[in-house]
Length: 246
Image 1 (cartoon, rainbow, N blue to C red):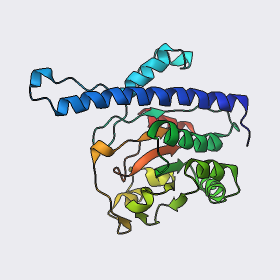
Image 2 (cartoon, one colour):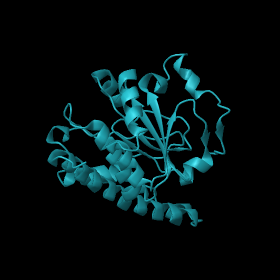
Image 3 (cartoon, helix red, strand yellow):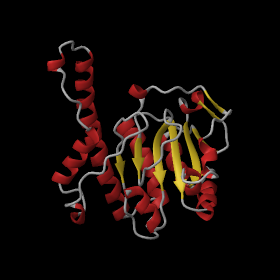
């Protein structure tokens, strides 16, 4: 599927951000490794937030919308207090949000994480979009699925929230789990069921130093924390954006 000019422009800007993330992450990792071998506390250097540095560079280079000039960077951290990159792609109605989400996963995996396997949490706002997205992603002939297949060399697994999840699958495939927004919301007793201990999740342990996560569109989700590589959130109304900025 050939992208429209504005869609390609969005991905070009995303690529610039991912390149900066990679650059700043490399610097942060060098400082962290140097600190590990340092015995003199006076010589230990602070490890800066590489996500903020990348964002500041994008702002200096004029990549950000002018109406965001006066808005400070909104940091995100995972359950182990690691800095998590996050970015929102603002697309016109009918502009291909889901298509760009698939491309974004591909670019994040290849350009930033530099691997073709991992666990993608894909959150949609309602049943209609859930059914539509599931239909497209499970169809190997559909452009959305083909984008993911190219990113993962054909090793893609589409999952739903009650499907079993195995570490070996995540380390050999691009596993994409679809969720509705209600399932990702911790505000009610009903939706907390997703966060209970699950007997069909196997082989995972929390290793913060090996965790690299990226959130595209909106991120306010911390479950299966040692597993999630990329989070996609497709909001369809203002309440979703308000939750993101809270």
